[in-house]
Length: 218
Ligand code: E4P
Image (cartoon, rainbow, N blue to C red; front, side):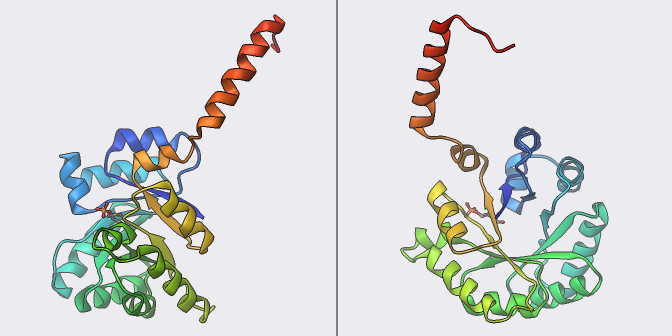
């Protein structure tokens, strides 16, 4: 499973990229607002830090303007994945950009039927939002199960399932068990994946005992 980080905070991205475990980045207009910096500049910087796909989202709602925006975003760097919403205009734009060789991430996916359409439109990634479904009392992970089941019926489909709106480590674990290709994870959740209290306690005990031996390895 690939790990993307869901943020437009360049300092966070630099820090997480240094782990060597980061495969890509996703941003959206709300994350750009939080970063408080010009979008094109931020995306360019992120693309230079992380060689994997960096999602940059269009904001037009009509096909013509969305395509224009998508082409402009794609020009920033080779690893930009243009994000379009799961609407008829978004999918039309997805098809056009994919035909031009641009990676496309179809976002705001909340049903298996929508994911099927995204794949037909040639999306590189489809982003089902699990946390937002959980928030309204539905089962976000069940949607991932449905999409994976459908996509497996068509081995020629190239679209990757990018699990989005991840709220905690169990979302990541469940997504991996279902074989989802990618999870995009907020920085704090990504860091939480490293943590276990028994790891911390175990390490402390080993180091305390080591100190008592008076030895050194180097
Ligand atoms: C995905 O690409 C989105 O940016 C993101 O995962 C949305 O998450 P949220 O529901 O926490 O805003």
